[in-house]
Length: 397
Image: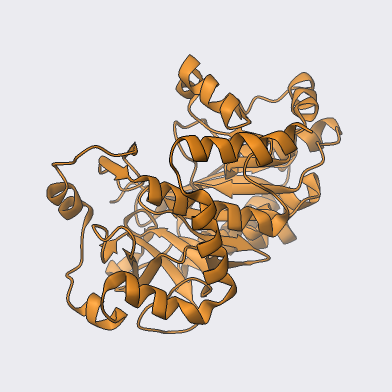
């Protein structure tokens, strides 16, 4: 009953009273996603010219360029601040139409797993400062509850069950910690429509773990503050779900144009993605296998000045998880070309009692790197870090 009231009354009235044309935006997004052939005409109309001509006539836009060119801003419906993964502080403004489009894309994605905007959400977020009075009122209106502590005990797990959320949403590391706690105490999680991971990288075997524990489909959201949702991963592949975006891949990095927010034209996002098909540009309905993350943060430095992507460590941990010991989380820090710190948290938090297992782990890592390196391997819960969790960091950047 409460979900019905929020999805059919509270949210629609909130959009209406704030002048957000959500209904029209959702009809547009749904129609475009169901008829991908119409995207080219939609983009041409929005840009005032054909896509290739528009892209060729605009230079690449860096974050610094965007900040410089948008220092003077008028009033906006929503203002968002972020330092992002690049560490460059940004202030972004959005109109009511842009918010409507963003929420329409979110509604389209959620409906793939049977969720409507306004259903009860359990949000796993890492910033405790967001629990002030203003945020509590906002969470009440948005029909969600924040969970910021990963130190789960039985009472906390039962409180989540009693909250009866329709879905879980948040940092991958926090969702994994919750799944592990339910396994540890043998408590049945609440029935869910989906688990939605965002903000942090997550390996395929970890997605499988979430699906097994929560008995619900797992979606992985890929986006950023500038564009909100860009793509969603469901059933092993990312699909571009924002029909307003045109995506180029230049020098292994994504360059994005928002046809409805043309201040962000040919914007260098900094991420990479593995597309199966080589094209001049990509739009909604196109698929890609994986997101390579911020390029400057995911480079592994090898001997003789060579480099590779940190995805090799995700592959290595998948193999270790499947053949040696069950891994819950892991973190790898490159100290130098020769030295790596490897933190491994097993599902039972127990350190393997066999030196043979540690030696095999080193052998697998050497094989993936292509040379013999020195590893400082530790087992147990990962050290707590502020902000987002990522599986690889380099101290050589």
